[in-house]
Length: 361
Image (spheres, one colour):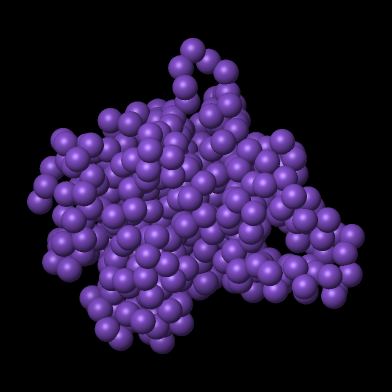
């Protein structure tokens, strides 16, 4: 619930220890977290749902348990109100301070995560849509031109909540690279397919790069029984997806800021994600994103179920954001596997209807 474990205090403490080991903590300026305001939350969530989450602090165990039963994989307690408000508010505050140039970039080590949260329902341990709330607040900022926000979700699970909240908005470009397994990996929905591109004015502003892992991973949901696989996507595949899909589109979109749903469950060693992205790989992904929006980037922690790989991967991202050299890849000559290149090519073909400059492989 609100205690220890991969989705609680241990993840925060392990991340802090890694930053200290790398000598990063003393090079960062700590922003005090703050609760999200009701007006910020209701920019993406239904007002009655916001009130439900905020009221948990005053409810008894029986009432809270009944609320859990009506949600999707949500675990609640009286402390959930404060945690969820602080998580969302801290991401909003960090994004606004980056936008006004108080800080060049920011990392938000927050729990609970947010990218599965829906307009009126908690899901996947997510109560409020932290990154989406921040994006919505940025869109409200005054100025002669409409603000443009790029959301990059590299969590191994599809950011279904984020997708649905901005499906019709051409001012928010949402990119998600995730395990899909033909809809058999959490959140167990075909909405993570490459063909889901947005609708109305937001058509082609939603980009899904869905990995289908080979058997035995396909169909095992989120309970893989191995930590790494030689035929799973890793550094080469993720960088290929960035270089061949995300970066050309993002440069044309020209965002004012990049918000990252930074789950690290695609890290090598994560028993749930079963992918092979190394800390060096995350360093390179971060390096790519720093080339956009004048380097204005905010990382918000999402998933990650192996505490060591999560912490090391997060530290690699922070190191690059602080201006350290990109970490050399452990196998720089490795080429992406063909099964994943086929996915990338399919995504290119789908989105070339709008982004006709995409370099097809």
